[in-house]
Image (cartoon, rainbow, N blue to C red; front, side, top):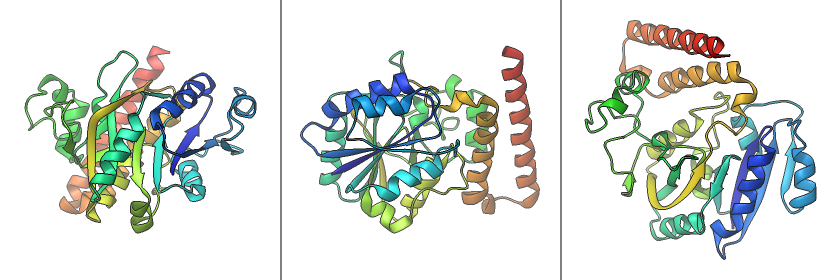
Length: 286
């Protein structure tokens, strides 16, 4: 059985599309659905009661971010596979059964993700990732990886130089549709709750890879992710802060020992400046 774990916040319309697409995505496979609601006020609870009575639905009293609620779902999941899924996704027919079949045939693959496109049909480059070293991250922030997408020197984070239609092993994948073998969680534990939201998926993948599990991008199937509809826009300033904080915490946890204390302070300063610029741009656009 596969356990579908979803964290939602005021995404009633998109959540319905997501849930309606699940049966065809699994084919003949058995699955359960667990939804953790971060105190939505858009009548999500009525939707679940009326249309999806078999869904396991738990509602928190406040917004706990992404990582804590996802761990809530994982902790009660019964499946041999865990599918972390964003509520603003829509799955193609057999998109998950194809991934399960591949993972069953490749026992050393612990985490897999299908091809993810956005609402316009464009490939979401951030769904597969390399290691976010300072240079890789800065190249991404400055747009160099987009402008020089064929040059691996500038594309080490989002891996733009790789063919989006070719299966490949990567360092990390997005949690928007991340399929995980239960054995991986049993071995390395659940998500690190110091990540309020963002980059908890990369951290989990890095830990899995250190435990000798392979992480695969497998475009044999695809899903659509309507980016930004999953609740992050409900608290935009908080989302901006946590996005930048998570990038730095990931760096501090996995990469900072490779650099001097002076460089680490400089990198923290760069992240603060980036946060201030992003926040200012957002406020000016309001």
